[in-house]
Amino acid sequence: MPRPYISLELRRLVSDHAHYLCEYCLIPEAYRSSTYQVDHIISVKLSGSTTADN
Image (cartoon, rainbow, N blue to C red):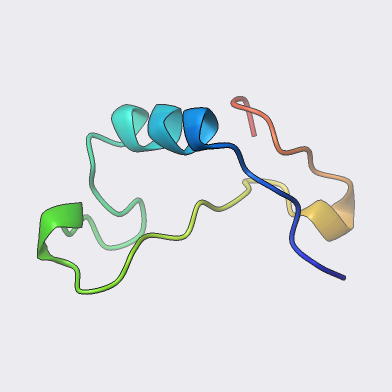
């Protein structure tokens, strides 16, 4: 199953909320060689939504 589309606006909201740090390892986005993956708290396969509150 393909991953659902996550808008640029939602990606920016998530990054702002996390203060541009990885939520798992807390490394700043500027120090990473690859882009961050925007993740879901409740996975899509478990009926999680692609919204700001998930």
